[in-house]
Image (cartoon, rainbow, N blue to C red):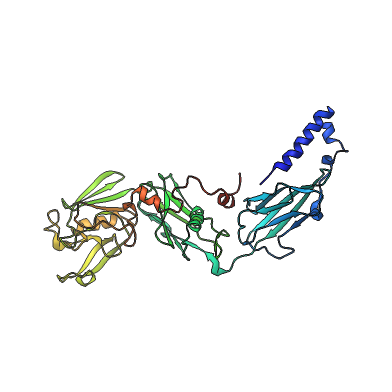
Length: 413
């Protein structure tokens, strides 16, 4: 906002004091216009906002103009009920002030308008109004995932939008409003747009162990596009446990388990045989099932099998598990004979099943298989480098958040 008219008024008072040599007395004299109580400026200004109980259209800019040829507007401030400021601009001649950022929907606003007449006497007017609520068809809502609970340090935070957002500028507005915090703090972190309706958030390298992670949206009432406004969304809180990592070396047929960086177990395993090689890369535990029926038809294998598998820890949606495979114990630790899963003895699988939880890390190295997909078949988010990950953000290449958007999302302090 342009505060220059107010500054000139104060300087004029200072010069008058110096000229009269009377200190504050001259400026505070009852005969000077600035000593008077501010008059009601209602008749001096015109406001484009609603009258009475009507609500303002948040799509339209607000305007305050000076009426007549005498006097001018010196300052206008506009805030909502939470103390968030609306950006505005005052013309150089003091004749017009207007908003330069959109209003929030379904919000209460207060405008403080300052004026002065031809003699320099100050006027004041306080205006209050409410904005309307866009139709439900325009509401953009966010569903955070996973469900609240305790997870491993590899669990990404997800944000599912109920409507697609494709425009880069609109995506930036959405992304700035989606907040994720970790205590203790994680190293780095940003959102990645998987597609027009799904975002994932992860730090640079896993979450801290025993952390509390919260996600919430500040989108409520925020204009995203001409046809889309932010709606209210439920916040999310999850916690992490120990940092649990399982590293399967398909070349030497062993799975090594680490807790908080220290090795706690080494298990002989068998992984995918030629033609069914296990995927390389980092996967995240998706869930656990005590028993799963696995058939050759589910993966199109030529050699027939139909088995009830126990202590199954799932790592991809397409059916890759760490599970008990008592029929292959002779090969475990020696050769790869499975159709892509990691097989081990029943006792080892039961231990793994009891030790790992959703969000824990399962990594495969030295396999001849393809690399784990980043998205679409589980959580392969960690297989993208930090550089590639940040390129998936709508804010990539920006050093600072948009100042207008920040003013609307956060109260001034």
